Image 1 (tube, helix red, strand yellow):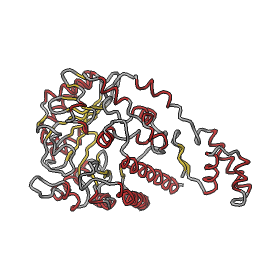
Image 2 (cartoon, one colour):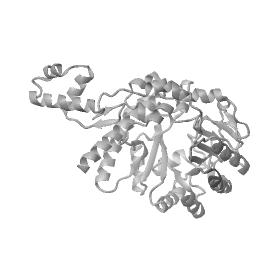
Image 3 (spheres, one colour):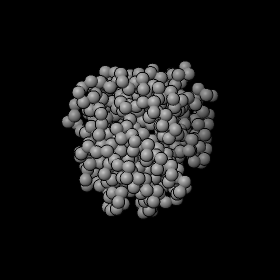
Image 4 (cartoon, helix red, strand yellow):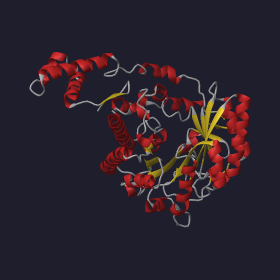
Length: 443
């Protein structure tokens, strides 16, 4: 396969075309290419391949230039338009997940539940700072949001009232561990939540090791039937079962397939991000096994799709129809500018992973953004600001990676988490392979 990075065009080619493209990349002309490949391929086939590659180049599908690099300075001066909030509706949790960056919901601070008043002010702030943007997103997050369920419902009702007044459209989402999930919650979510994230790590022994109750008992048996019922009630759409794999289950493909075998069609299992001092942290020496697992998973997804029992794996889902998103390559993930996290007492942070780190507190729901210099710093988080990204083929699919991961591993928000980069490149490679294989099948 050949990926033209700047246009996003993907080509499935034979050995001859691959060799021709390699020589074109070295600035060889057609005569030099024919000479270099003489004896390995028939002359007329070399000429034909050269012509086809040149035609694709002229059509803007090969060796295209990056026309947006020069726009980044102008883009950084854009006014901030907030489009999404992560409401920490509960800094408390009924589980004691061993890898929880929020310290069982506390986020380096105190246990607290968001009041309706603070939540309303947060939604008012979002509306006031969304400019002409009509579609807005609000994620109810924790800790465990269902521990503050009445406020969740009341805030949704308030948001629906404000939609009519301000001509806005709220898309609400919810992330839950499932312990308090019941029929009333499911019914409400199916009516009001555009997406739900259901936290489960995979096989029983894997899940229960990392996601126990505080007294040590596992939570798998309690939540699985609820999650299956919930996913079916949403017609296996607009949800994700979302897990985390660690050093303890590097064979995570088995966890993904376990979830698929339970009937789930929308699955995300992601690598833990943790300091090297933790026994469950992903290490550089784990990468060869992880790469094999992604390959195994990609092949199995293709096989199951052909058998009519396919499922979606979040990290393998990319859109190849429109090329890399121009806005995303310039703005990155949007944390600290377009997307903010709100604590139960109303403080703003760039995203949920920065909550509790006081140097990143941007302001609050009463005063708004008071530290514009932090927002300005986050505006610079994009692929063009990171030298390591300039040679990475996957750069426009990840947009430079996670600022929080960068800070936690390098002390700077605009650096890269190299282990994460290696896994991201592999995921994109597998995603492209799946797309190519399925397109070939359709032919």
